[in-house]
Length: 366
Image (cartoon, rainbow, N blue to C red; front, side):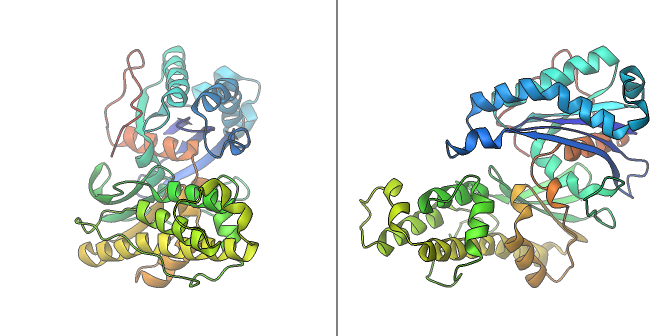
């Protein structure tokens, strides 16, 4: 089973071909093409939906063709024969930015009709989890897992829009244990980056600044939640703001936009390091509780923040079970995770989508 996956939920236009022969063994990555419009958004300090959608329109067909050419190099220039190799199409239909999702879904619907391929509608967050079911590739520069995760499986889902813990009993049989009640962890990283004058996206820039900082420079709070597996990062973000104001001898009325110019590089590094440690500890604390309660056979991390070196370090040090981490290129948004999810949907008899009526769901949840 070879599936073309299309992902356009935010600012990456991505397509990939994945092959699954044995669902227990995991998928084989045949191609992974990504065109990012991040540089266009950096000066605004975040993703501008209209710019992202226009970028998808320009990039979507070249990216899909790149994915096909990489997957089937012997058939470059023979598009009809390339499409004969594809058994199904999978596409992200939610959650994400409405305009961005629309480009991917309309493209996938059109291709499914034109080439007579089954279409699978994929949840973006589930897709991130299924990046962990990729175990092989001949593509250079990838470090793949040695085996697919076993069930029951605890999934730690951390990104700019999501902070969740989910327990999977089997494929497509899972329970959401907890989630953020306000900011997601990736969103908190972006906001702390703004407070300290670090560039967008916040995760990598905060991590880089933290290398020169003291992660115990001061105390920051962890939210106490009524539901033990839920998260909150808004209080932590506000505590960072108050700490930054205090460091420059100002009170809470001092505008956050004026703080970076008054902070020294050493102060920025200390803020970054301390915030990063506490934010990641918040995730790992809950993951450890869930591990102890449910005794999963495997633990996986998923989402853009899964690329965090601090998160990987803390999980490795604190969790009794050895975690195999996905390749860094498979943590941020990509078509491979959607293609893999599509493969498993097809192999396990999940419902196909109607290419004439499939609609986007920007607020789709797990």
